[in-house]
Image (cartoon, rainbow, N blue to C red; front, side):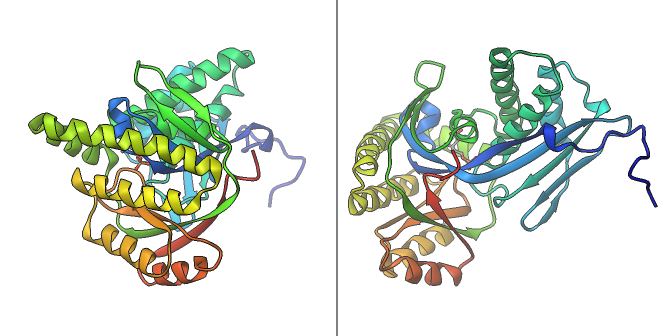
Amino acid sequence: MSNANETTSEAQPSAANEATGRGKLIVFGEHAVVYGHRAVACSLPRGATAVVTPSSQPRRSVTHVDGSLEIDERAERALAAIFDTFELSPRHHSVDVELSIPVGCGLGSSAAMAVAVARSAARLTDLDEDDARGRIDEAVAASESVFHGKSSGIDHAAALGTGFFAFSNTHGWPEITSLDVPEHRWIVARVAPPAPTSQMVASVATLRQRHPQQVDPIFERFDALASAGAQALEAGRWSDVGALMDLNQGLLSAIGVSTPDLESACYAAREAGALGAKLTGAGGGGCIIALANDDSADDVMTALQELGQVYSYTLPPSNP
Ligand code: PMV
């Protein structure tokens, strides 16, 4: 039995060093955003909580709603990229992460985790606030490129953010505009096993390489939908938001990232009264989001529960 006053050589995870990063929903413009077009997303109220602790016997622990996650070679490389940025040694630090969103299905768990770990690691250095912020950005970008290859940075922005925002990365740096969106309930259903984001981004790149004259105009449409969607969201014109989500889903299907499971879930949500539904994130599996009004939200949730795990978020989060 351990004594409360006993000192050990291993530092224990400390609440003072605990840091968080948020998950996200992409409401408009995934994939096209990789090519500099505009997208709209919202940070979730939840995501990842991490504690980095100096240790001579480094531990890796990642727990999530469905169990625990194995840290494979790629995840260890992503952690090493974060530690490198802060000139800390991965071999002398334990990392404990708790995820409160589903993993690897378009809700931005890897960016949420990277932000939480980087923020916690920054607290072990004597960097001032500005330098720490810059290094956290660098560390998260390095970690995300290990997981996703070419990425737009939208997950990274959402993991650090607090609410709805429009995002583009046209000139090689992120342009982020906060959107003032009235509170509303958003329904998320995980309806199929996820596909790796890097694989889905690569499949769109191949399609564009083969058919640039057909694919580039589709990307322009994503951009226009994101702009119209941002306006409809800010005005709380929910039936317009839903219609634009349906259009966005049609474009995602056109570029080959939807699947029969995702399509069926979108149809089921609409038939149960949703104003609109679409896949969210990279596609190929994972989650859909549905928007419903107060009268139909419960029916939409019931219909989606037949197809997978269902979550409901009030957005923007009330914990900025
Ligand atoms: O499925 P996720 O959470 O990895 O979202 C990816 C979003 C993409 O637009 C497909 C890629 C990106 O980097 O923006």
